[in-house]
Amino acid sequence: MAAPQHARPRPASTARSGPRLKLHRRTVRVDGRDYRVITLRPGTRARFSTNLFHDTWHILSDVHGAMVLARLLWGLSYQRRPGTFVLIDAAQLDPNPFDAEPADPIALVPSELTTVSPAVLGVVRGGVARLGPSESTVSWQTHGLDLALARRRERDDLPVGVRSFTRRGARWEVEAERVRRMRGTIVLAAPAPSLRSTAVWVARLGLWWYRGQSSVDLDDAHGEVQIWRAYHREVSIARVARAEVLARHAGASDDAPDVLRRLIWQHAALVRSRRPANILPI
Image (tube, rainbow, N blue to C red; front, side, top):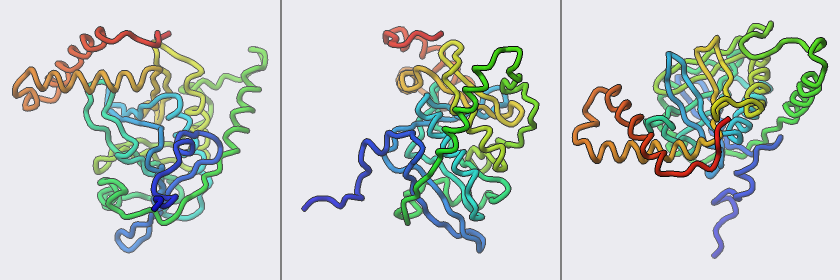
């Protein structure tokens, strides 16, 4: 007997980053309130990681992941039901590409509509698989993001003397997004206008590169979305480096975290030298 059509998402649908995403919805009840948890579907090709560096929480991915993240932020800004938030959980997370430490789940929250408490995050942090099957498929419409990007491109095409200075970090607008870690989850919370503004900047990542990386600040540099040209390669290198360090240095996992990270960073250079790079950073 053939498997039910809903048993596994079609590969083509899970690799898309266009204006219409198909997402899953679950409802959890915490402290007498219902929360609508929106998630990517199993098998979605977009991958993410997180880490803390220089007191800044980073959300890490590649160009495809940045576009998916931008569409999640844009669509979330138009939600009208209180208690709604987006969760990127273990199914779409990689260990970080520096030392292969596990990534934290990521919660995207429309702050004017939803407040997530430690209790809520404690319920969902274990992954949506623990919450039971999806209750429904959500059609996430983000055509407005494409229009906003087109308008932005038109503005960028203006002569320099006419174009306004809007580089992230030196903009005239006051952003209201907040990034923090709560109950083991990276929470990016913002009102609707800021969600849309951030979505545009995240979607534009990859238009500029520095040493193979492209990034945009969040929350007055307390957070950052950073993409890498060779994200998947670096994740793989970090995995190998961590495994080889732990195999060769008995008790390394018992060392102070900073000591172990330093050993992995140093060994990653050797692992990287064994693998010819397919992409040269610029």
